[in-house]
View 1 (tube, rainbow, N blue to C red):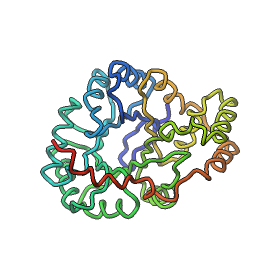
View 2: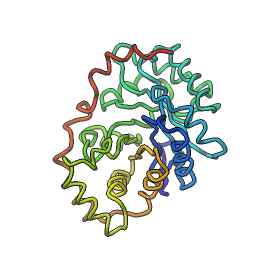
View 3: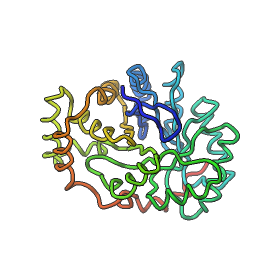
View 4: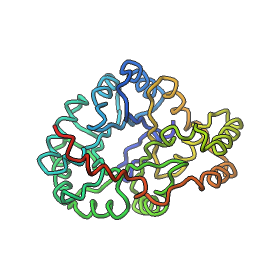
Length: 291
């Protein structure tokens, strides 16, 4: 397993983490998958209050040591008191005394970012969380969130990023690289779209390259992402098979010629910008999720 420093924190995280969105269909198998990933060197687990998977993570990490836990607060809970309550609930769900990385799940234009970040800093001060992150924030929103804090620094931005969605490369990645802010890539296999007909040529290339490394197309795609110093990837591991496959995506290094060929083949699929990945109807749902 390859480990990288999260931003400027000194924390060493596995470059491949565990995503837990949509877990809950088969909890026993999902818990086994997370345990297997941990046994294979993964020390980074990401969840969120909206996922409903925090209790699953709780059971999966019992007895494990030095696991870095990240979760997220839903935008409907961005008022000061709501942030505190949401964090307390996540602590209880996860069965931990402190959350390593607490992230704002999506931007919320209806609540002043200054109020939200004041609550996040309060959580750091009280020891309930260690680090502050954001998710689905573009460059402008990320800067605004950082400027809204007095003492703490944002250590990461979690965004959709894959060979099929490369919008973050335009503005966000260069900025994060310069500021030493980590980028956490969710849906790094494009929600499974990589294996669908529309991307057949790209999939065929990844499979061809994979034969030289004795790796699967998915492992090549993940390795291509984490070859970027500031990028972590958090594929979902809902089965032991997938957990093993994901963990094995760090045991090799792509040759430059292969990396360039993959880059060229995927460019026609990229979206124009990070904003294109935002689900606009989200704002209709913001206030439907309550405690």
